[in-house]
Amino acid sequence: MEPILEVNNLTKNYKNGRGISDISFKIEKGDIFGLLGPNGSGKTTTMKIITGLSYADKGSVQILGKDIMEESSKEVGCLIEAPAIYEYLTAKENFKLAANYYSGIKDPRIDDILTQTGLIKYANEKVKNFSLGMKQRLGVALALLARPKLVILDEPTNGLDIEGTVEIREIIIKQSKLGITFLVSSHIAHEIELMCNKVGITKEGKLLNISLMKDALSECETLEKYFLSQVVEKEEDV
Image 1: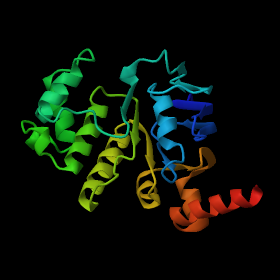
Image 2 (image 1 turned 135 degrees about the horizontal axis):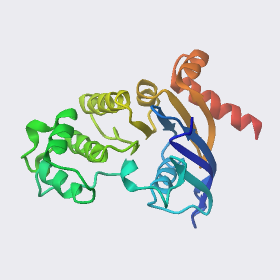
Image 3 (image 1 turned 90 degrees about the vertical axis):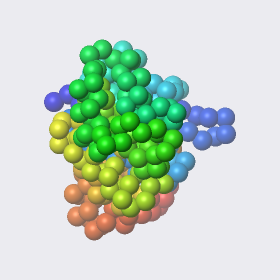
Image 4 (image 1 turned 90 degrees about the horizontal axis):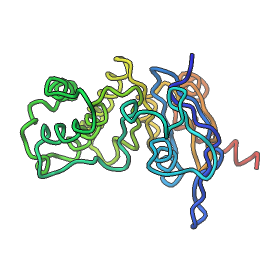
């Protein structure tokens, strides 16, 4: 089966010496693939390249077998760094504005995704009055609007309280069961452990290891312990 996303040898170097080096992985249909690593480990850079928000010095990205520059943007939804929302508009007005970028997105679809993400009762409220968790939920909902096959979420629970974190996680798991594939990043091992079926360990711009979640947990009981074991192992190999 052809992977939904295939990343090959992505490399990007910044003037400050940071960046990513030879990042490669594949994501199959229905996966919730987690990139786990500390801040500054290259997760956001990788995601920006995958979504076309940045360019690699070397390497390639294919979505559904096509180069990222050729693939329709409708196939990919994303939330990178912060939601692209207009706070002076209502939640529904934000959706109507986003719908202009796609064909065939009408009010029934907007109401449907608002309902699926638990925002329908806030549809006519100004976003400026939303909590951080609600704004994050709105950002995730906007990424899902056009029924993409792949959704890329950069630290979607960052800064949220326990309730907000659980809400975002439940949306992702529910949408995965409906057939959407996810690439999610986090620096919190527990979040990736509860959400993902596959995990890639990142540090200092490199992808150290890729594992099925069940295998990682079988080996080390918790993803946190697995992460530390992989980091120590790679340091000993150097």
